[in-house]
Image (tube, one colour):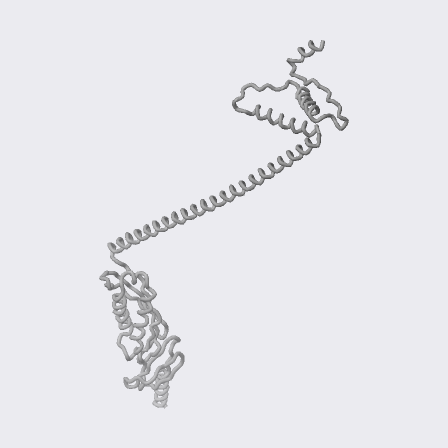
Amino acid sequence: MFGFDIAVAVFAALIVIVLFAAIKTVSQGYNYTVERFGKYTRTLEPGLNIIIPFFDRIGAKMNMMEQVLDVPTQVVISRDNASLEADGVCFYQVLNAPKAAYQVAGLENAILNLTMTNIRSVMGSMDLDELLSNRDAINERLLRVVDEAASPWGIKITRIEIKDINPPTDLVDAMARQMKAERDKRAEILEAEGQRQSQILRAEGMKQSAILQAEGEREAAYREAEARERLAEAEANATRAVSEAIAGGSTQAINYFVAQRYTEALQTIGSAPNQKIVMLPMEAASLIGSLGGIGAIAKEVFGDGPSGEAPRSRTVPATRRSMPDQRNEDA
């Protein structure tokens, strides 16, 4: 019995060892390759898997998640012989575990060297100005070239980005001076364009002002001429009316006409610049008396109505200084 117990214990231990050797657990995000006598047979997916113990073994444990690889700084010479330093970053993902495990030795090193050589070739085919202003084009060309070269390895290059492009210090200073000169040139051009536009607008404004002023003067002249025409027409009508009244024997019309002319003559004499002393009647009654005298003269010329009576004489009042003399004569 003692030997049988030992045999059962050994058998149980052997079963446990076989189970541990046959059952394999694969973590999420990984794929394991299985080799039988050193030859690839199949790939284990994430989860619980069973292999033939002692015949099969795990070959490579491939990470199927997207991974990042830093590209170190390297010297690049552009097409116009400008020396600069550039570095970058590469993102890749294993799509086929057996190819990634058995088609290339040292997968990360191979991707790194492939990326570095293509950075030198792509950037070396471009001028410095293109390198500094067209990073998207550089990244797109690098991604296309490197992905095509790495596709036989069962990996996918998802992204390649250039992080820094560092030209030499003297070249940076020269570029700064060039940029400053270009900006000064654009500023002068814009200033000259602004002055030209300002002069054009100012000339246009002066032109419009002259046109409006000429139109205003023309309108004013037209209205002034029209006013003079209407004034002349009114004067002609008034003269015609007075003439008709005089022809009809009306003494009131001639009195009004003579008084109006007399008043206008006095106004003209008073406003003359070369007159220092103006002799005017001292009382308003004297002016009225003068107008009455003019009316008496008209009556003598035209008569005093249809009866044919002789006109009566009327003394014309004089100024205040001559009034005492006339009173002495009457006495």
